[in-house]
Image (cartoon, rainbow over all chains, first blue to last red; front, side, top):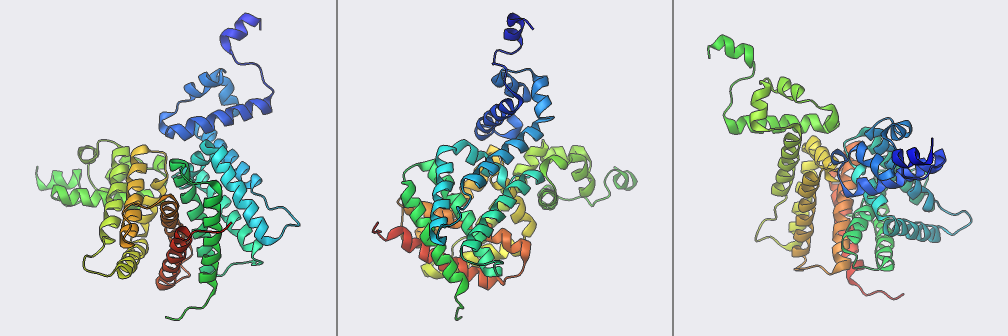
Length: 204
Length: 204
């Protein structure tokens, strides 16, 4: 391929396969966070990536495959940045995890929005990615409390708390009128009260 | 139309327009709660409703219009059943509202699931329906506390609480191992603590 034909066919630099895939996933995060799945075309993705459509299909056989990969990459990143450190006290682990989570929300806002939009979406594969991420978070919080398998009320409470963290995070992104510390403090205190309510026998 | 040709074209009884529309929306709730949007065809909806495809298009010009109407009807129903009674004390209003909400979750499980699946979906019109329902719930809880416009931390807390109610409700539907009273009790206590955390000045 001469330099001229390369410029015509693909103005973007040639990348190694791993880099190209990462570039496409970043671009997908940006595109899908801004517009609904139906409104995104593969032509547009290829054009913005500066590659031929055929090359895009080489990495992702369909638009849906591309979307699932974008959601999967965001979920993977969020799981990894919040991974509990070993040798850290339980309450510090929770605080670190929550800080890392809100850091992801803040700095990877598009990725977080895309993940949440896909989260309860109607695609079963996408829902599976987000649901298993949520189940992992519930398990980590329970493990931090020394609980191997949470009884029903505690499980519902922890699952509810993850829903609270997600909803409050989306509110935070939308309004941007709270400090990260204030939100983290609120969510931490709420988890404490919630666990207390879920584990204290109640009188009618 | 002779009785015979009517029987061939449409085995279902003839319904008045309002009844037909309601029948189609009920059917849509059932279909969309069980399978993703993309996997549902208008042919199937018409067949299961026992009407010609043309008649279905008369009510809903496209599959997406049908889906938006199904989500809208479920949101409308949930808003209505949880509407606060006048002349009732604030804490009773919350309790009644929450009981009605969980009653909807329990008895209209398909409608609730469809609503939540569409809730953070990627269709802007659908998202608008669910987001404005959530904003209404936040406003009602704040009004029950005598708050006209919630300051940022309280607003995030209330928005988070709605997310908790939704997530815990989905967990409840999935596992069915909790009484409605136990879940309502947990959510009510959690709201109390959450509001306290969001309105009490904190020392670092």
